[in-house]
Image (cartoon, rainbow, N blue to C red; front, side, top):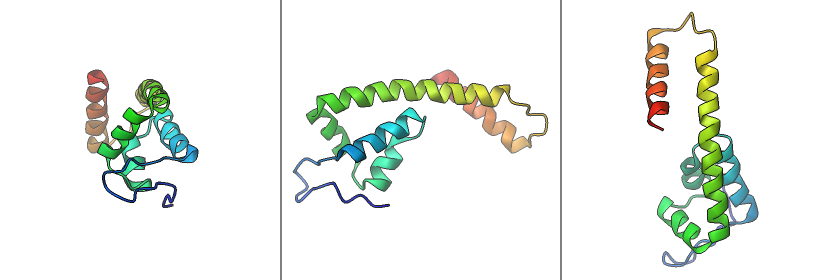
Length: 108
């Protein structure tokens, strides 16, 4: 679904995000998703434009940063659920991928 609420008549003008678009981004982050996919593919704006928008909207920036913090916790919980599941019948590729996720989680 393509968003039509973003108004950008010239490249130098700031973007405007509707409440629905802001909530979509925040919900994605809270769910442990990847916000840049929503920002680039759904909202059709660049990450640079989005971060400029954050700088111009401190209230939303605060909500965004809080959502990122909760999103990381959500990712950790998802990874813990994977590690606690019965994985006796995993292929070599799945096991390797799980180890890579584990290393990434250690990094985070």
